[in-house]
Length: 341
Image (cartoon, rainbow, N blue to C red; front, side, top):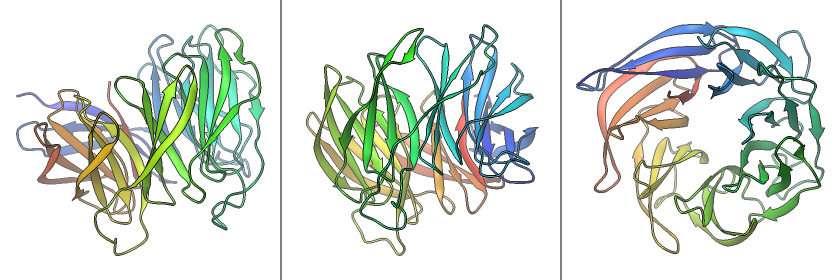
């Protein structure tokens, strides 16, 4: 068996940035080293067509109340940081045609549309704003955009707003970007949606709800969404308030996994034709699992435990969705998430 390498992302204000991580696929042990320093980096995507990486930055150095986008070269070395036009940038995605970059700003709920030039460098952003508040104060005192992504058909920009209990569906066209005002669908009041993910057959999508410690299931047909049900993510009462974080599918599409910050666990839900069934939750190997990742071969899961500042490795059992701790960890300060190439 050979080692496997990937990037881990740290938001630390001093030693944050992109870390090289190597996993020993025999023992589950890991080693890491800082690859590129970039304080307050919190998410990273790859754009191979431009030979670049893009990252969201919660706070730009020297610019008050301004998040931004970090642009990295093909070797993941920092080229430039540009303002996003809003505060606390926390997520980003590329458009299907590769001509636009979209970011979500948690601080003020804005969504930014960056046109990309022929080299992939971002231009001046167009800013989209929502207004209102939710049921849970102060967390929902205003809009808090937390996710940007695209519908399977590629004709809707989908943004998730934790503060407004809403998913916004912006009509989108290749070469033109967002072309009209969004439709809006809602989770139950006070659930606080965070991230979403489509089922393998693209007929449903699932939303991890941060404030409700739940997952909502939506039916998807012809570009329209309908809420089906909302399910608890734990069989037990957590010892402290639980805020779900990352939501991912197992490589075979049989299980949906969601990280639990507070309960410090990963919930495993089995996919059924009509719903989801909670199977178990397994300790994350640290405190505050912001994200986790499957290795490309599907044999390991690595968790990113933000507040304990460590990665933890697990062997994955595809027969029952089980996570078996390897008993190995690796320290990275304020580690948030991953990028596997």
